[in-house]
Length: 464
Image (cartoon, rainbow, N blue to C red; front, top):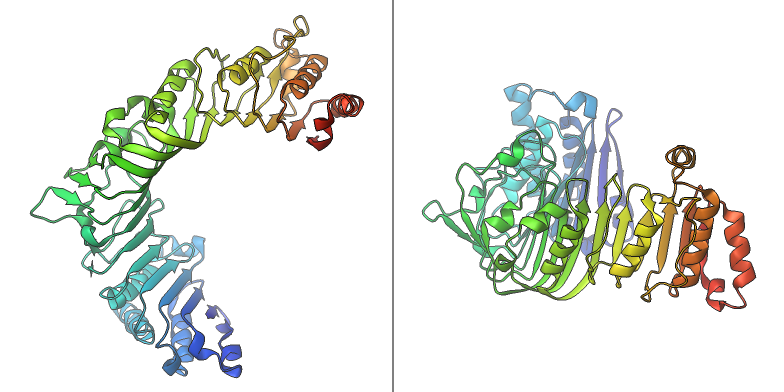
């Protein structure tokens, strides 16, 4: 069930009238309220409450409340809290609104550009339902809530955005089954989950944990929590960690069981290289999304990926994004990588080396190929059977001209010949994407060879 108040006309858009007319109010289990405002959320809040109050007898069965307070970014960014009277009006009306749905177990807070007044609305709703809710999801830090205890909570999902004050209510670590914290700083304090008398926080019932750290600012990588603690996850089955820095605090400060079912790691390759592999649990299902740049040696990175993958019984997606602007030399074999995305032009010989050393590769994306007109000859065959299914060569519009004048290391004819070579020697290829490479010779080649290579008829060609 949806109700939306829109300022400045304060019109209410809702499907409640339809549910009343068709006699379906008793079926409503979820109430979604959106308040759009420019300067002050109170008028919309007041009108929504008045409207819902007229049919208040029908909200007893609502278990899920979704509340979105959407302000104007330019006007709400520095908006003051207003007068004590205004603050009191918002608290009083929000409390009355929350009391119309007394049996909420699942609370979801969203919206855009929340002002101080919007945070007051959220805090009041959390305070009103805190003793009962089992699930809480919020797109923003829960300011004004650090004195609230959510002792029945089992699922928590909070995105902190860019605010420095990563506040959330007090929560019993032992009752949580699922925990997701997004965009937290490296020095995030786990105090809301802590027992003040115990430096160890045990999430004894937690099955799923997702933690993503925000992008590192200047010198922030050196920060540590003011009051460090040890985190224990004895029952964890799913672990997702995302960190753009060179440190994984959640792993460095935590104790895991001997085995866990699923793990997904997102971040710089340096994180994998610095991990104490023995500290990680044995993994049932592992997926990785890693970034490698000029500061990392490619072969050392491949060895580190192999080391962590060997701790898993099964690996699904192992994706490597390469930002090296210098030429890449690949000699180490990594039989775990399934996707490679190279963000700079790469030599044809390097492409062949990647295919040769990564036998499980199914997706290869290239930002251009360097093919010298002096050495356009390729090997007669690839030494291994490749399982690549999707090949993308997205040459930037300026690349051919720039490369042509750079040591003669680009030839359009040689590049086309190399693509034709790959078509012949990638037996599982099903999708070919190219840009800024002559498409007519490639289409002609496919058409002329389709009788000898019937699989060519099933290749999806996206040539631009």
